Structures are given as structure tokens and as C-alpha cells.
Length: 100
Image 1 (cartoon, helix red, strand yellow):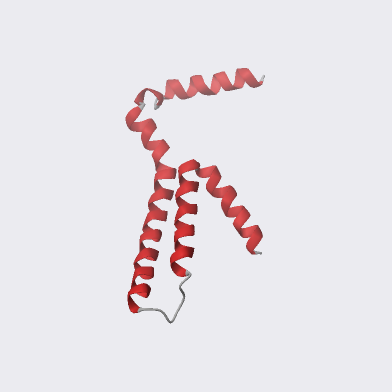
Image 2: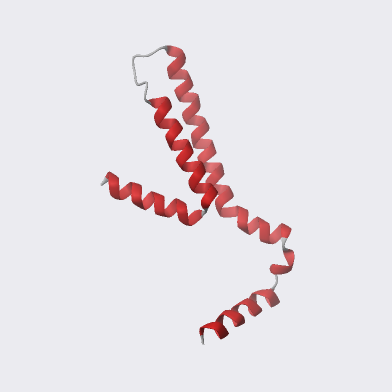
């Protein structure tokens, strides 16, 4: 089950983009390293692990949000000439002619 789940997660994060994949894997590796100390350790260590986990959750949400909304924002704000009905119709027509 775990092997299948990790494979599905890797495929999903790779489909969202290279930077989302790298950020997510980096966050998971650091969480594993910081959480490896386990219970029974120093109070400061548990606090650092809790702070790190909160950071990783926020960082993961930020990376997923940027991975999803980043390309949309780029089209809207950086390349507004591509955000028109005429460009969209020309792109569809070009694609249809290539397929036919």
C-alpha cells in the first residue's frame, strides 16, 4: 500500500511541475530527518520538530498553490496578449489542423 501511494504521489507532484516536486520532496526529507529523533528527547528538540512541521505544512501549501496558480498568473499578468478569445481560438484551430 505504501509503495503504491508513494508512486502515485510522485506521479501527481511531477505532473504539477518540477519545482513543486522538488519542494515537496525536500520538505518530506527534512521532516523525516527532524522527526527521526523520536520521543523521549530534549524539550527543545520536540519544539524544533513541531516548528519544523508547521513550516513544512505552510511551505507545502505555498508550493502547491504556486504550482497551480503560478502559470495562470503568468498568462494573466505577464503575457496578457495570450489571454484573449482570438489567441485561444487560433491555438485551437492550429491544433485541430495539426491533428487532421
